[in-house]
Image (cartoon, rainbow, N blue to C red):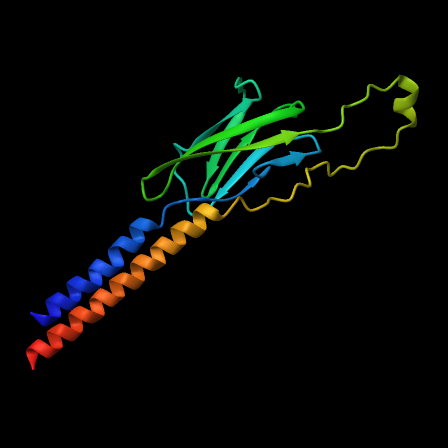
Length: 181
């Protein structure tokens, strides 16, 4: 009987901690409230656990109008959207909706601003004088961590629950051992 109670108490402690470990946004490019100063042709969201293929996002401009994302793909922990042409300068909101590996649907959003230099149209002589551009024309944006307040709160609650469960388990074990003597 004592072994069953201890086993039950251990399961009680371990099971809820897995339910508290929801998928969360680990980083994004561009990050929340970032001002992008280079042409932007992709949005990348990286999560702390794998996400399902049903995961997606929409992009809205300052007026709340949908901006067409040419291709959205999910690969393991990454949700990526690409554009054929760089986004025009302006303010944008990314509304993402993902299905975590635990089956929970999570929706959040973040904003960013594009302030890339306007391309100047060159005359034929300016074009001939211009030196060849680098072959590696990739964006050099550094992904920043999103505001971790929500993650810190979730972690605190998880550790608080684990600690309380361990105290209850310790008390139950002590009472059962005393009762058995």
